[in-house]
Amino acid sequence: MAAIGFAAMIVLANVIMVPAGMPLTGAEIGEVTAFFATEGLAVGVGSALTPAAWILATFFGAGALAALWHSERERGEAWSLLGLAGLALQNATFAGVVAARLALTSTAPHDRSATTGLWALHDAVFTLNGAFLALALLGLSVGGLRTGLIRPWHGALGLLAAALQFASATFAHWVIDNGGLLGLLGLVGWLMWVVWIVAYGIVLIRQNPDTPARTLTNDRTSTAPA
Image 1 (tube, rainbow, N blue to C red):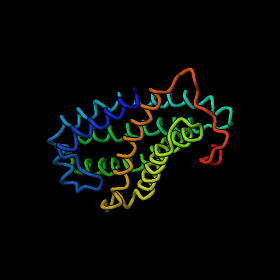
Image 2: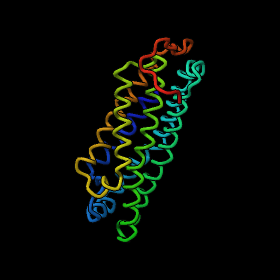
Image 3: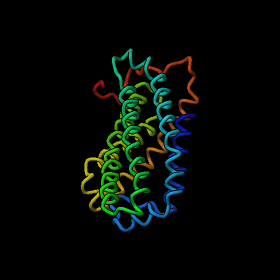
Image 4: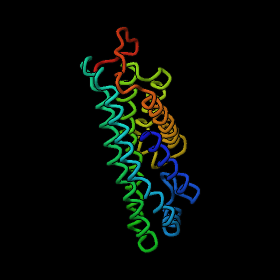
């Protein structure tokens, strides 16, 4: 339930802010100043949803760890811990993004130079956050595949989303400067991440808490132990 709640929170925050004119990564400072100077309410409401989203993401990670840990421990692996670490790191990193947005609502009406600096920092942290989303997707996708908790299509979706998020973070300099097709890497990866986490939540809801994920004896999806 936490996974589904998290997805609902982050989608709702975007539904509030994007129609209000939330600038894209790399937007011109004039557009940024106009938005944050006039749309403080939209930013405030969108930001108000994020603390609950971070808590829900952590609950989801703990639930996934509980479902996977017994089988992983028998295999001498810790992919679920890797995924939980990724979720914790993305929570901390995105707190910086939200803090920058809230600060922009204060500087935009009065100080263009401070607004320019804050927006540059916002774009950099926002784009680099893809590395931690990739870590969460990688750990819980591989862990779910190797223990048989999730289906191959679900794991493949997570790994593809992880690759797109990591590519966006890797090319952060060019994503911020140019946007365009490179900017779509993070957007497509983010949409896949939302679908992936909802599907994972459904898997955990259906999972019998008294029956740990099965250990695969003939694992064709195996990779090197984490």
